[in-house]
Length: 265
Image (cartoon, rainbow, N blue to C red):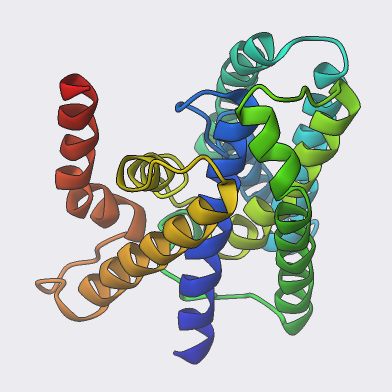
């Protein structure tokens, strides 16, 4: 129970902080930690590990996500930010297709169920080892330290006061990958909070200092994820409710707020 709550908090911080960094790095409100295919890569790695048994689920997820980020790293050195967004969407679709092929060729129904339970992201941490936990916490610490250390640079970049060189952007992507992987490799993909929460934070607070949005997004992310977790655990009407699907339903009013506010502006 306590370990599950730890990852509710960790995911509620890691994904929104990674998301707001992407938005500042791209100067685009559509920036998201899944936009470069990182979420799809985590799922592909988890699927390959589950179906083949060649490594633990979390290790497979991390390795594949790291390889995806490495590809984006080198692409970043060659293209501008707008082109990187387009590439990321196409690359994510490609990786997702590979994941679908792997999953649909599952050697047994039990393995297929094991994978989908991971993908439901219900913080049950089944099959997760102490080594996986320590590795995940280390990634989170590295990613959060990089986010805080580069906060001033990202703020100036977002204000168009400076430009981050291609190599700097690539290194920032690696740091964001650490945050994403620290959550997704253990808990499975969790949608909305890495895109919707940063946008809500920017609606609530008009300051451009990214550190303010780190605080607001983290508080909102943890709060929304904790609410979803409690609903899934105790108000489930006797059926299995995946975290990601339940959060999407609970977050619908928040999504409506984004569109209504955006239209009014």
